[in-house]
Length: 304
Length: 304
Image (cartoon, rainbow over all chains, first blue to last red; front, side, top):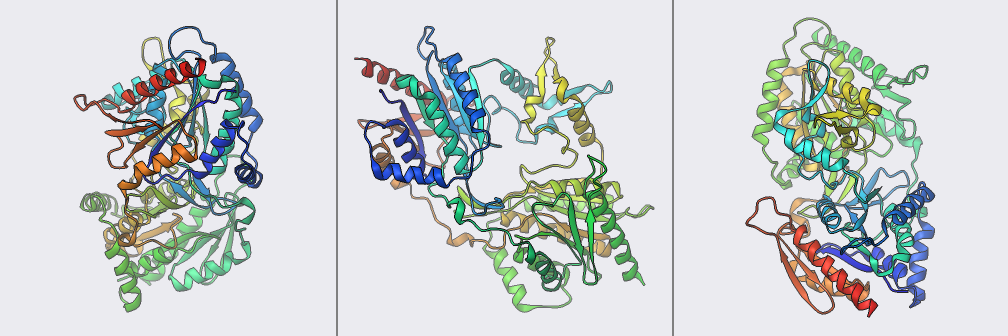
């Protein structure tokens, strides 16, 4: 079998060992390399399960079937997988702390536009929140700031951003042979990249991988990560009150943070619960009410 | 001087040493604590310069002057500083790799809405890209997906998202005593927090700090960070070609990545430059052209 064409964008920081090894395995299956294979197998064996892998594969296979027919012209019938943005390495199973490789995703997004222009179909594998094709002309403000509601309650674009926003929406809406799928962690990145490699296998030389993502050069095996210890939460809250002279500590556990918090002061611990009879209720509603009361007492006490 | 009221949201992972110490210094200046002071001084001395500190202070002072008059009703004349989202700890001066504390910013954004409702003026110090007040009802898709261009070339909201988007834009547009400023790194977070503490100093007990940001519990002093070494770039590119069997490596240096890349193959190194005579030109334009040519040759070679 002919192998696909592989392009790696590279800057001085990249090591990319894991991704490089994966690509070896995916594309050079004719030359068995036992050690390498073991290394890759151990990465995938130790990874947390990918969410909706079959759904992603289905989407990819349908896209490739629809777009890989050469219908004339250079570039048609070719498929490029463009990866873009940085990957994270979680340091905990629940992913509160992680190491991140910064990458705006600008190169991947811009390159996607030019591959489409050249007649390629593009599978765009991007880091959530990174730069998107056809959106590079938008202002850096949060997108919502570009809009306003007219007197007739229609939404309109602020005069100042009108041209850029209309262009971005028109180009983004246009039908193009582009399919997008997103990742955050190094695990998701490599697992999805593997699915893409599988889907593109039969395209042989008509396939290209353009790996512009800033892949981490290491990972922490999933099974060796820290677990949370909920018992120490209130001890820590007490410590913060004393050591840092906080007036109030709002303590929560990660998994129930939207349902319950404990408001800790030097004299009391008050549990605050979300109003679970209402679907839309926020725990911040009773929480801020309680804090405003505490603040009022604090102001009164200091005046007396 | 009466001290301000301090509330810290806390989960089991937070340590928050640095932020806690800063708050000590900002609010307990009547009880000198030499060691603590030294620790804080050394943090700020070693931090990279904050961009536009005077501009931020000016904005804050004007906001507080405009909004700190008690005009009746509980909560009016009070100012709360809400911090929100995770902080990053850069591992390099140019900040390619960093350690991040994940936080969606949901609690800070929701709490801001309820403080405003209670009559407080809010200084919202948020991590770039984290959750914004009045935007929580928006769909999780990229915001741009909610819009389409009508036949008359007006922008309209997709039927399915119409209610949520109109509500978010209306609420976001509404005039409220809310000022926003953003951070990414632990350095920016604590430097801006210090500016806010200075601005709020005279409010005494009418001020509250509601620290919902997930502050890092350590930092790497700026002066001891790695520097980049551009000399090793092409060596690494060669290594990637050989070890990972890439067909092409696109090598760039961080600082010139939008102007110049070197396309490295096993037989040649080709410099690709952005067309600098055109302001809007992308380097990806000539880069992708070159790669498409290489891909065409690759397909031809494999067929012959």
